[in-house]
Length: 278
Image (cartoon, rainbow, N blue to C red; front, top):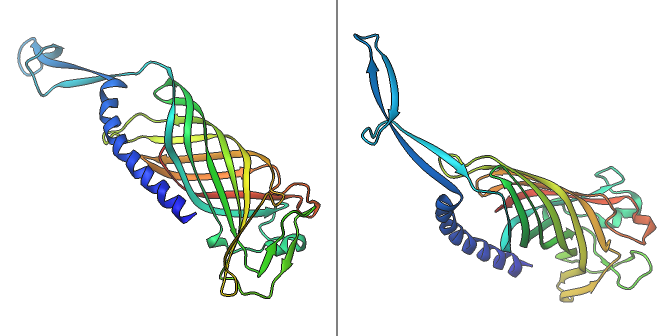
């Protein structure tokens, strides 16, 4: 996972370089700038003479800029955007405290994380202030377990065993293909070329894999893959708000984290953190 995040960051900063170039081009393609220079003339006599302005090419001090927005249109392509890095929280039937049935999932909050990004998108721009697009990407949730347990594979319900091993890392993870539908409300560019974004919409996730990763002196590094009864198709909502290239995100999923495991009924996932790139 560390290598994946490192690679993602390299891709983001590389994309940032190209974004600088594309921003320069955008100035000339997205916006038509028309210069109208005005020259003032007096009508009447004395200090109270009225003033009017007419178009002129001579006065450099009175220049008015009129910005014409680019026409609506479709867009499609590869991207590296909406890089999310934050904390994940389990909500047990409306409570942040785990019930006795789920106490074995007790986790370290500051080491339980959510990471994700989009790699492709298709959208339609209605005007400079509103755009809608559907995108595809990847999303990981890493639960850092407190207890020395092992979540068992190929069990009829979510099952664990207690171990006589002191794990320095005991991580229980899920990975999803994420497909969010985004409604992007944007301000006009300010003097620095930045804008505010408010984005919200539904999010669908398709399970790719579940994994247990453990590190101990006795067994070294171990990885076990299985679906671990993670919900195969999850659905929820998200929101993003920010300025320039960065902002904040929050995600909440309506269905349970696990399926076909009655003891975990009502256990849901909520994530929040920072997001980079729009």
